[in-house]
Image (cartoon, rainbow, N blue to C red):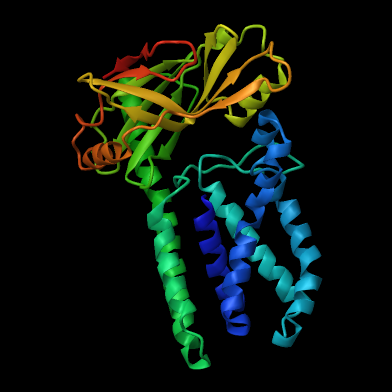
Amino acid sequence: MDSITQATLGAAVGELMLGRRLGNRALAWGALFGTLPDLDVVLAPFLDNTANLWWHRGPSHSLLVMVMASWGLSAWLAKLWKRDKVSRATAGWFVFAVWSTHVLIDCFTVYGTSVLWPFSDHRVGFNHLFIIDFLFTLPMLVALVWLACLRTKKQLPKRRRLNAWGLGIASTYALLSVAMKFVASAGFEADLARRGVAFERRMEAPTPFNILLWRSVVDRGDAFWVGYRTVFERHDTPVRWTVYPRGAAALAGMEELREVKTIQWFSDAWWIARPHAKGAWVGDLRFGEARAWGDKKGMVDSRLAFSWNVLPAEDGERLHSLHPARTDAGGTLKRMALRICGQREPWEANPRLAGVTGSLPEFLAVEE
């Protein structure tokens, strides 16, 4: 999740654990340890793009590092909080609780988290929440700002109630996302079954800032189908699928490159590729698209949120991250809201894959 969410969640857990003894200092320390795992980004300038894909949400998010950090910091924190009668065991559990909730909520997103490092390089991602979701963060943030103003011992019960409400609403929203994914997933599955479509695997993830409109990616081997549906639609409502050819031939002769292997691992094989003059363009389908409807009626250009250029002949850095061009965010959110309310036309259009280096937008097939 984003840094504001992680700091807010850490502060809320800190208040829950040690608010009675430390007061507002529990909020500050919780916010600090809540963001600490993401400080792996400080090494980003010293790593190449390939190493960064492995490093971010890597070792710092593993269970092993959580345990070691909790034990290693506990003695220092117990000494620091000696006047507040905080034992070393309590200090250690404080660090572990805040750190582990950071990792847990990261696991709710699609990015993937190396919880089992170094024993496994598999990344855990449940795909229940978008990486930024204000409806998850705001209840905790409002409660924390309010309770931070309550400093007397007489106000301690109110502090605890406010924190419980904030954490409770956020936790309920997270659990609700699990149910919403189940509903959406069942709808996608029913549509594929009616069509008699054979596939190897599929995944669902929420669209930005909500848990009502979901996106499914279906792996059919040589192509991926991508479709959208809301949790309010009946199971017999047809899904409009966009077909993305995998384009594996674009990576011919580059399969053994470290950069290519890392992208294939990072994307959990949800990648597509296209050739260009100096190498290949590779995109990760898990993260969705930046959609631009433009001036041409009935057409939508989709630029993948995560994509790279692989340049095998380059000296030094051979993997270059690409960033989608800015689109009309307000217009996109409006269309998304209309799609959630059941109006399909503003959201769905004739799709083109845009943003591929050195290529014009590619018209994509549609399965109605």
